[in-house]
Length: 114
Image (tube, rainbow, N blue to C red; front, top):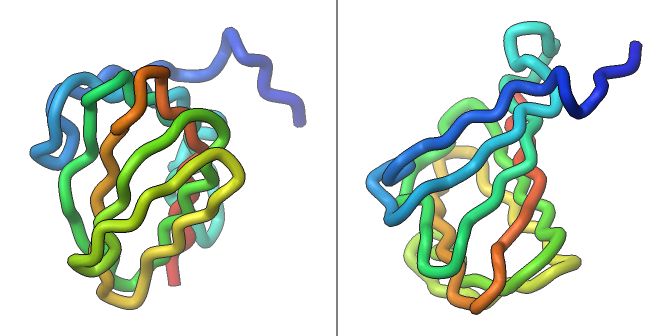
């Protein structure tokens, strides 16, 4: 199966998870069609935008940082991130992410379910 970019659903979320600004999600695969996963999306945060802190119970979320710089709160600890980094959050842990740079922060988000 091939999914062409123009067939992918684009979603704009204001203040995602009580964060700041507008987050753009390009759903690379429809989550309802995935087995043992519920999200596979390209996420873009403009400068200053964020996804608010949230927990992951019975699942693990991976952020694969493609472009830009930011700050991740990983279980209450602020950690700078940049292109090439991977953030792993699961087993009841919590995280948030903010674009602290001057360019868009782009990442792939994958949520694997247990």
